[in-house]
Image 1 (tube, rainbow, N blue to C red):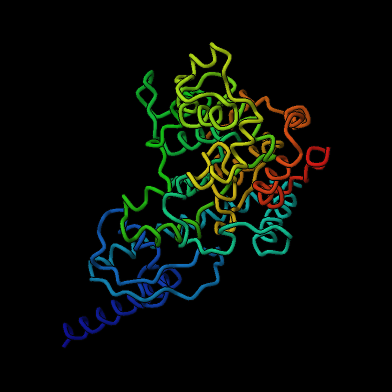
Image 2 (image 1 turned 45 degrees about the horizontal axis):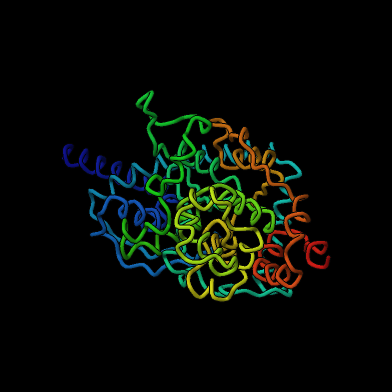
Amino acid sequence: MRAWHRLRVAFLLGSLFVILLIIVYWDDVGGFSLYPIQELKHKFAQSGCCTDITAVSPLSVSTDRTRPRPPITVYTTASAATLISKGAAQKITDVEQKKKESEYEGVKTADDGEQKVRKQRIMDVCLGKGAVDFPGRTRAFEQIPIRELDHLIVDDTHQIIYCYVPKVACTNWKRVMVVLSQSLVSPSTGKPYTDPETVPADLVHNSSLHLTFAKFWRHYGSLSRHLMALKLQHYTKFLFVRDPFVRLISAFRNKFGRPNEDFFRHFGSVMLHRYGNVSEGLAESAAEAFAAGIKPTFHQFISYLVDPETERENIFNEHWRQVYRLCHPCQVKYDFIGRLETLETDSEHLLKLLNVDHLLRFPLGSRNRTEASWEQDWFSQIPVAKRKELYKLYEPDFEMFGYPKPDSVLHQ
């Protein structure tokens, strides 16, 4: 009888212990579901294992955290034990994250107010509250073709998404992303780069270094859109912008101000033939053309941009493609919008927001030399009618990112 009594006591104590475990982990397990389905599906997708996961409908790209609980999934006992142990680790991680967020609250500055203004302006334009409209304004994120998501760089380690805009400090921000993702090894040390300034500028534009949304289909197949939605919902997303006309001047100077074989072959020779009365074949290479004094003018460049034939032939090159077509701000709710005009302060503020300011500094040594004050001189030879046509092409960027309408250029 004593043995039976001891057995009953042991059974009762064991039952109480199990009940205590359930109470302790109640918040983590979400009722009787032993792990949030979003995180589990994400982790299994990365490992290539999806056998225990039930079908889940794609999530909206909205960043609203007040959404219904996901479907409950039942796992084996072994899986449950593993997941419970992960729950404890997750508790510690959550506490650390809250501590970081609390610390960041102490470094808020007037920049936060400016960010609210920038984000609200984008929202207003996307909702059609202004006078400007543009293609793709009202489409859903799922309707954006995969090929148009090639500028959204993802860093899973630090949960960051950066949409790069050429001619807006993108070389240095790509350097930062390379260091954070440790995707490039220094030949001198044999280890990943730790200082963005030491990353060779010519290497950071190699597309193989960066994981972009456009590559998700190749990596994740049918899970691609679901994973994009999850990352857009939970990761910190940012981009940097610039006065659209000044960006165009910078792009022209960089790609056509000196011999560039690739850009000359694909664009420069077309401009010379169409708008410069230069016969085809007369200037077959950039080196020969420039040596003979034959090179595209800024007027020819603008004529090429406003020519309807250009748009019918192909989408604008990324160096002069509108930001709303590169980064889809009406579909992606960016957490931070930086400006080249305030690059130094915006970069410092952003690195703190990303919780990586202790890991690296943004390289500010190399700055683009194209100034807004140059607009008057550069556009002086462009007919007013073409200037207005050009403005209509880039008006969404002017309005969305708060750059004033260049009246002095449009009505001179």
